[in-house]
Image (cartoon, rainbow, N blue to C red; front, top):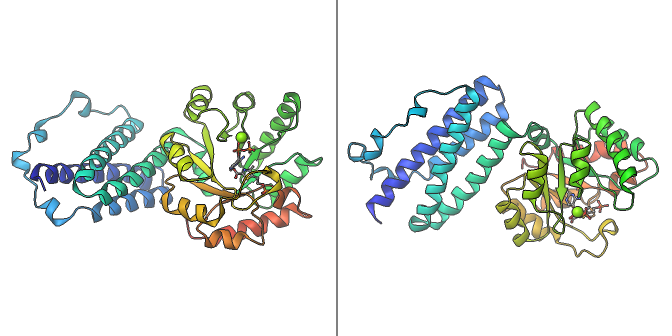
Length: 340
Ligand SMILES: Cc1ncc(COP(=O)(O)OP(=O)(O)O)c(N)n1
Ligand SMILES: Cc1nc(C(=O)O)sc1CCOP(=O)(O)O
Ligand SMILES: [Mg+2]
């Protein structure tokens, strides 16, 4: 292996880990967020495992022309956010270098670094751009509404049962009705500290200042939602197979739906993606993801066993005799799932 490639890998493994350490210290002492601190530590340790002896042995600091390079703006930072942004950029540059030269050295290194790079994007979104991402990350259960007569009553019962992530979805109503419902649902969600997402309609998400929008494969490109809603809003994408998952990764979706796990009348005519796609998502999705489609209290255990740590439901709660109790059951089951 070219010694120069080993030196490049060595320098960028160091650079990425140093940048993550700078970020980690703010998570620990500034934000006092052990969850974010642990994410940084885990990413550093993952990179450390790839700092193989032959890579370290290639180090030649005295002969490295780059050690003398400094830029004026590196001498001073305006504030903490500039420290974080500069070090996120430093980490992502280094990871991109590791991914590209890793393709020459060992493709498993390149693949591992790609996964780490997307986890760093999610961490950056959480820390610097999207105020509601920590709340989404903390929510394992995601209720997607269906048009029912007692919509607000069912949603408030679910919120009382511990729901903290809601999506307003209504394919039948006119815009005036959707606007009225969305306004009331957002008010409810904010009373309970829940994340509020709009299905399909970016204009409605904008109109009620929702926390984000969920887009399916036949909906607008994520880039359009980002341009209209701004970078601080959450954009989710539906996926049914590895190709759609890769496209969601490339579009940097903040989270994805994975389904339909089972065929469902709520989305009639869509073939089940099955447990196989749940397992594929568990192994390959770098962003938060929610198993959806026919999920209920009876089969949730199987869906978790297939690899899901988060789930999204419609009928299980919207048609439950007691939506609060049903929500409590689903939340409790998901709390037992391995972290995801
Ligand atoms: C969490 C979540 N996953 C998938 C969907 C499906 O959205 P979409 O593909 O837009 O299909 P419709 O909901 O529009 O029928 C979702 N809404 N939420
Ligand atoms: C809205 C939606 N999206 C799906 C997808 O696979 O993208 S499945 C689905 C409906 C889920 O409803 P229920 O929980 O009642 O089965
Ligand atoms: Mg849609």
